[in-house]
Amino acid sequence: MDTSGSNSLDRTPAIQDLTDEQWHLIVPLLPEMEDHGPRRGRPSIDIRCVVNSVLWVLHTGKPWHAMPERYAPYQTAHRYYLRWKNSGVLVNIAFALFDTDAMLARPVTRRSGPRTV
Image (tube, rainbow, N blue to C red; front, side):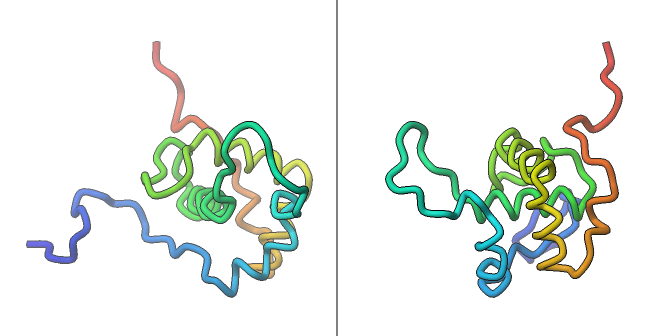
């Protein structure tokens, strides 16, 4: 019997979220963390949660929609992933955290496989 409190059916690899030290290391790399004064419109999203969400997908290789509920909505995480990938921010984050961008070599898609009709 599993007494660890985790779901024994969940085969998702455990990925450690960013430590405070790692977070402080990459904050200057994130354009969203620049202070542009008061924001209007939609409520702000927790960018640290978004970074953790993107890293989870990159580390596990699982589709975006398979992210555990503790992460940002997969649509939001995917949107930031594309923005950061296209602007070079994601490469800078990868080098700052892991001294390599090897995790970005694998293609990441929103779908888990071919769509059936």
